[in-house]
Length: 343
Image (spheres, rainbow, N blue to C red):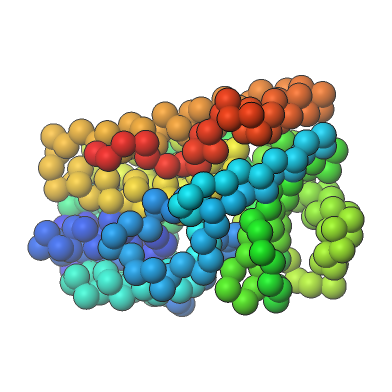
């Protein structure tokens, strides 16, 4: 059995961000990824512009948008800024680049390495290999084994359904139609040569099959033919109950740090992965970035709870939200899982 300073379960953006930072400080790090390749995941690919900071090349950006179009049952608004508000990325390309960067820093990555068992000081994979650890990081998504092993339940789940299809659309669009999507929304997120068209909602109020049919209805109204195409779906965990547990950490979706309101998760995964690494390196480190991220997460959760209080209540809450955005009473940054100030 080989021992590592840190074993990270999951090779998504959160796990790779954590691994890279640790390896650059000379730590022996192993990333165990259950899939055969790093990167691909069902994802609309929209993230705040600040998410890809100076360390990320601009070539990773698919498209950048200085405008956001938001429609509801009764309103429409276009938000605009001099600088890009949101960019789109391809999860496969982002994952491959982050994996290459991690390996260059000295990280060991094992694919097809499904973790079956976790003890206090080691993990065992499906192939029977065992690896010891001083620190363990759960970056293994919404169905995190590390989270389950810690005894943390997951009750607040969102569902996202995505079609990635050829198309050239000029604008990024958000459609809050409570009659079709309840407290969720449909989206049109343009990429370079394709477009992500999909829907997100809380699973407890919108069952996946009904949500898919509603997306098809909405698509037909907007001359978008979706029925003949193959959709992809994913669960999104926004049930945050902590991220630091002695020598074990949860980051990204495993921690439930995705936004329950928007389903956005890439940014919070990267931030929490890096902040977990800083905490591993310095037990006395106090993460202001995590405090801000958690505060924003709680704000989104409160809005979602209000919007889940019944059909009329949900409509009024979302209409008030769009009105606030349209009049400037609510900044669009309030909807993004961003960090307001540098740590």
